[in-house]
Length: 307
Image 1: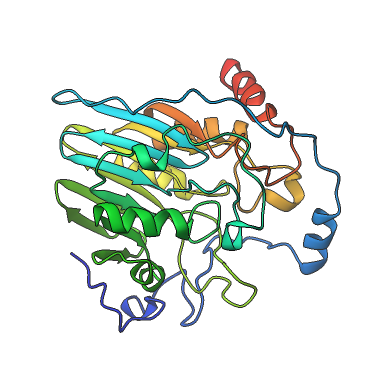
Image 2 (image 1 turned 90 degrees about the horizontal axis):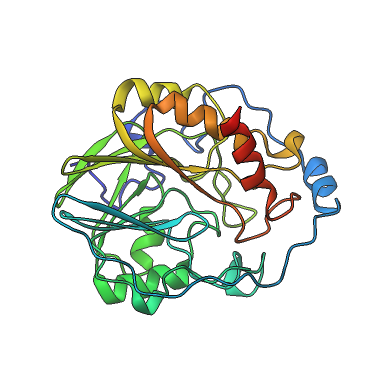
């Protein structure tokens, strides 16, 4: 197990030779041209497709798991409930009505969670990929910490926030570090993205995805990422992968989103790069983060798969 003690603010002191930490901030080792403040202003002024205000979602309790089985239930966006014999995993839990500060700002949720927060079974492990509001919902996390007291695995620099929400057992990892957590073997994998919760903390914490092994099953949860060579490296290092959970939405316009979000066609290539036997699409049709219509990611994914 890695040292996740609180005297490592930002975490980067562990890897002084890191190719993605400069001593103060994390960065993407592949050359990425990040949008300028002018680009952001241009994006915010662009016309967005009209989304419905509400899309019905069937309600029900999550199914149980049979011996040797793996059951994955989509909660919505990047939140999944994953049940195995080794225990129950929750990824990037967001149950809030808005993806933004205080639960009052930011894009409004158009699909209710596939499993209500009150209906969650006991959670043993939370995997938190990074600190953006559509992945790191402090209200939901605080409730989960109080009800279940699960362990959390997260990239470097996020432990302090999680401990402030009531989690007692937080393990923060650098890319490619591995930890055994109560029946789960978890590896933090690279991603091409960024972090921020305020205008003043950009890239002070790391971002990533996870590959975890539970019994005979190996699952890859990609978090958020633009397309890059790291996906082939994940496949080379960690295959075979039985199931990959891959983002397909929040990609338009490409000149602005390409560095940090794959589109549906790139997601199909990621499926091939990592060598997944099966993949499930995520990060679409819940929060309107970018310009595309609500149903476009699924339509483009179907066309890319047919091709």
